[in-house]
Image (cartoon, rainbow, N blue to C red; front, side, top):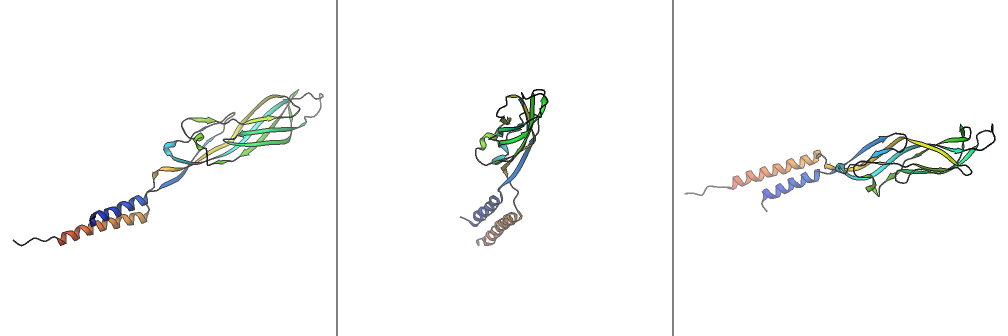
Length: 200
C-alpha cells in the first residue's frame, strides 16, 4: 500500500472515531381528567434505552352508606391498586376518613405517587399515536360502590434514548484529521521531489 493510501486511511479512521451516538431526553406531559393519553416514543429519533414516569394519581371513590341518619361519616378501609403495571402501580391498604357526598353516600379521595423506570419491555412505548393509562381498582370491605372517578395530575413520561445522528467531532478528532491531511500533502510533495527527468 502506498504512503498516500495509508495516510488517507488514517484520516478516515480519525473521522470515524470522532462520530459517536449521543444521549438525549424528551419529556411529554399530560394532566387530564380520566385516563391520560401520552405520546409514544418516535423510533426515528434513535434507540430507546429507558422510560421513566412521574405520576401523581388522585382518585375519588364513593360507597353506599346505610348508617343511622345524623351519624358521622365513618373511617373506611380502602383496598386495591391505583395505576397500571406499565406506568407505575401503587398498592392501597389504608383507613381513610370519609365524607358525605349524598344523604346515603360517602366518598373519599386517595392520592398516590408512582415514579417507576423501565429498561426492558420497551416495545410497549414505541410507535405512533398514544396510549391510555388505566388507573385504579379500589374496594371498601362492607360497603357497596356507588360511583367513582379520578384524575392524573403532574403526569410525565421521560424517554431516554441514543440519538440516531452522530455527534460533531471533538477538537482532538479535528487535530487527527488535520494531521492526516498534512501527511497526505507531505507524501505528495516527497514523491514530486524524487521524480527526475532522464537525460536525453
